[in-house]
Image 1 (tube, rainbow, N blue to C red):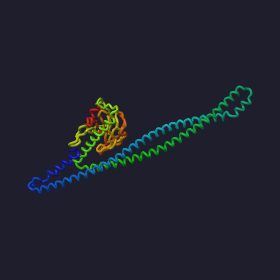
Image 2 (cartoon, rainbow, N blue to C red):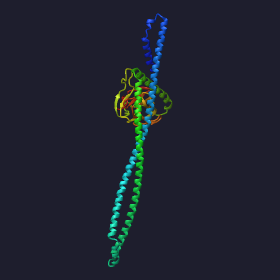
Image 3 (cartoon, helix red, strand yellow):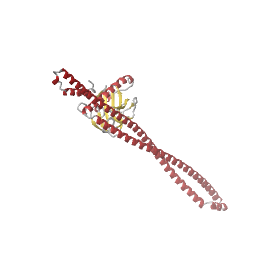
Length: 382
């Protein structure tokens, strides 16, 4: 009996127990009629279960589409913010250059004013007076040399001032261009933020719809078991595929690194390994509460073998570390690694979210060896 068929089995058993079969044991026809009634009840139960599963599947698919949209929007928003940071840095440098050129302009203007005042005070009249005074020819020579130097200095200052003004105008034009680009980027960022908020509202509505469709503990138990079975099946399939693909890769595994792995992120552990989720299900990993959008990092060197949405785990990344060891990171907001990507310990692979129907942002984290879950707290540094 599979985990998916257990709830059906117990519901059918309940129907049989409520039918008065003992009372009709002596009458074969009545027994047949009662059997038909049981079959009818079973059929109605199966129809009810089928209807619930369709509703759950529809809500889960809606949640999947919404959270994939959020994944894309978050990536675009992150890229826009990086571009804005770059433009702001360039603008700051241009402002600094503008300030320096403005000071140079003032300096040259002062120098030119001094030269003009000097030319006015000691101008042509002094020059003619010295020229007519033949008693001090050596003084005349010195003054001629001085005025020649002064005229050259004037010309150079005027030329430098012109160049400074042109350069200042060019810098101002560059700043205006940067400001226009920055304004466009700011508007794009606001649109992305608004889109993200709208998508978040859609996701919250999808989560509420999903919660309504899973009205009882039995249905929730069936959903959790289905999630667990689907994940374990996925891990088994991946292990079979990886035996053919990654046998040549030099992945050392985690056996020599127990208690030495880095934390995937900073946060408070709100769900421990082995902690009971409900009456029959225990957690195969830990859940770490964190801020939405916080970076999630790989705990060790490895290769990404899964990066997509999975029911019950939301946006999920699985990394193979070799020798049968894997690490799993679930309930993310955005995924930044693709299948086949190589990652190092501490490298960002995702950002924290609450995908998969979680009510609060956080990271679900597992360590597995040969498909079996192990306590992650024994592997990461205390």
